[in-house]
Length: 289
Image (cartoon, rainbow, N blue to C red; front, side, top):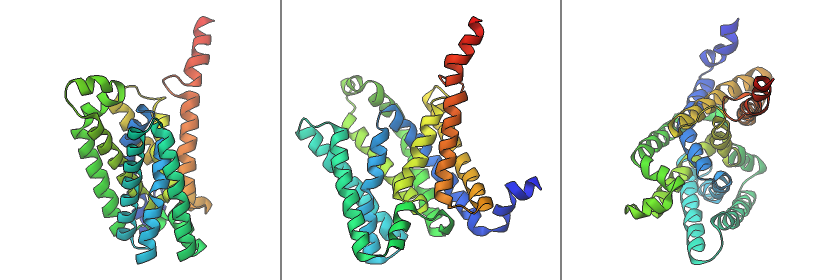
């Protein structure tokens, strides 16, 4: 009976197996990216970038309908354009990077909603905003797997300068490594993973699987590599449990996955191994007594 509950749905239904594989591939790429976003204090910027891909995906939808390649290329182009424009404004004016990103992502979100609303239906808009992981096909799985592979290889190549740029950008410049280039490469990886996630979870929730497990990992691990590993593991667990809850309780799969990740975050805050409420208040009080 336990086997039927935990594994039966994935054995019986191919679309659930594809959804699970897609969620696991997303977790592999999003976990390390989310970890570096948290380390670089760019958590809200990830949210901004998730909105920035919307107009590009909407333009792809307008010309080719629900075509994954067209929407992905459009989303990638729009995300990179917003990152470029926000970076230019930040360097040419006193405006901080977060404020610059906020201005451009709000314009992008409004433009994307306007395009979909005027050239599609409310159902189409819901598909773009919230995704349908249960409808992921083989093409989408190949795209998500390829982006996860590229992400892990790229992070391995720029790991040291990326860590130095997060903690001591002045030292990175002193040894002749261009921090701006590393930052641009990292933002490109962020956009790529958001493009991979929007087909499954939609533009509004793709960032959830990237940021919530990364924030929760902070309460279980310390070193950067272990933070990334725990973040990916929590994202994968959220995908698996969320799909199970969605199947057994007949709930929408995307929100079920993100709410499961949120529950894992709350559990981590309460009883995690490092700096959780349990270790900061209850363990010390017990030892003092």
